[in-house]
Image (cartoon, rainbow, N blue to C red; front, side, top):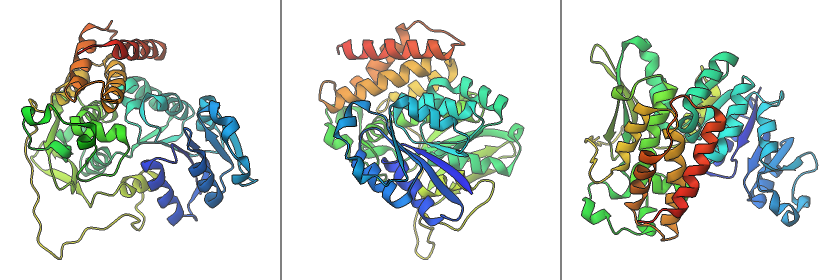
Length: 382
């Protein structure tokens, strides 16, 4: 029995994780769940799965919560420290890290520090502190298993050869809602337009990241640390069908791809079942009708955020923490119509260029750069 803590249980990844747990109750036990402030949905989850512990990160809403809606066997806790504690707890085998943004870093590090299996949906963990997380995992024996569809695809494809035989990895991208549009066409888009993703149903922040292609920039950085490859061995291809989730090219020219319909339950299930494969919960592929797959190179002029990913993956150090923090604030300001679409990568580039860079930072130094970047991003003027 694999005992799970699903951190960020009310979001899209959390919901898909619960689908997998629902299908495999004989193999997966939901021991703990967390949410930020959506206590009603968390209570609904608890009534179905009866976890031992439920946590709401936002302590200020404690008096608003109707505790009678939670089952008696579930202990309700509050605060981010409670999330970090459960990530370390002995009764947890696997932590599903689905908390959005840098807020998920502390609990992810706690899980790695305690030698858990960490199913990483929170890409910011590796963007901000990749070397620290990877080094600590090697020391404690923690397993880092990707949940992002692209990184899960690479993880699966890498098993076709040895690491020293890898020539490059190719991250695929749907291109978001503005695929094929010119810089002039994109310049005046609204938040409503940017939130219309053609393939995935995701939260607002990650949907905007997909529109700017900052999401792919962050995935480049994540891949850099997760797979131990330099930025020069990482490429991006636009693939509008979202059927090929990523590819690995080996030195002999063979390209191994992982393909499936776009359904996050597949990579989540694989992270929980690895090294085994279970019967699919996710949608299976169909080949009874003709269909085509298209690939094209990315447009760096229309999507300048993508270049930031390669730059940060190359430079490392504190750049990941600064980029992530700047982007989180910039996306929020865009959604509130305080910045334009292209102000997002402009802000990030400017603060990256002028921040106090450290090549081998500590966690404390990363947190300091994160706070500096957030403050400067709120003050930044176009």
